[in-house]
Amino acid sequence: MKFTQKLSIIVCSLTTAFLHTAVITNTYKSAAQAEGQELIINGSFEYDDLVNPNEPDTLNPNVTGWIKSGDSLAASGIRISNFPSTGKQGLSLGAFSDIGYISQTIPTVRGQHYKLTYYLASIEEAPDLKNKFKVFIGGKKVSVKTDTSFQAYTQYTVNFKAKGTSTEIKFGSKAKYAFLYLDDVSVKATPEDPGENYGDEVIDDEDE
Image 1 (tube, rainbow, N blue to C red):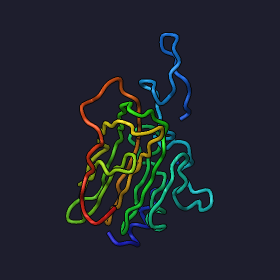
Image 2: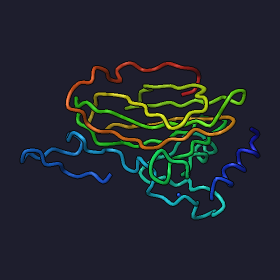
Image 3: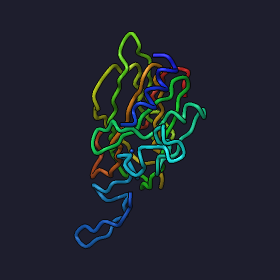
């Protein structure tokens, strides 16, 4: 799919945590410690309108609670989408030349175990198949998926142990011919060691 065709898909596709203290057996725990307390803000990407408020013929590039980074053109390809896993909206990952990133820093407790879950979909298919999706936790690359062929939203999980009082959750992506989609991002504390953490980084190619 050529660049002009990809832009037309963006246009044609238009037809848009709160943290609190948990009480457990009369003992207060911080949101970062409480089992089952959601730590990600706007992990379902429902906070913002589908349509760009400044350009009503395009999808909304504003994603509340998240920070976009990387090459400016790549970052601009990350937009609200009406192709969700659940709810009404998800996130379209449309960077096609360089990796675009989206991240959020959450409160954590050093030594506490957590579970990150997210749902990823792809609409690329061979022979037009060239994409990459990366996950970083606390600055470390913990997962890399390359050339994910056409798939419906699929759940992925990463267990980790916090190294400090805050932890950055970051996703990087690019798709040369079509799009990847992200939805239902969640981080919650877990009651015990799940048997793995992000102590070892994943090494892939020249992309960071």
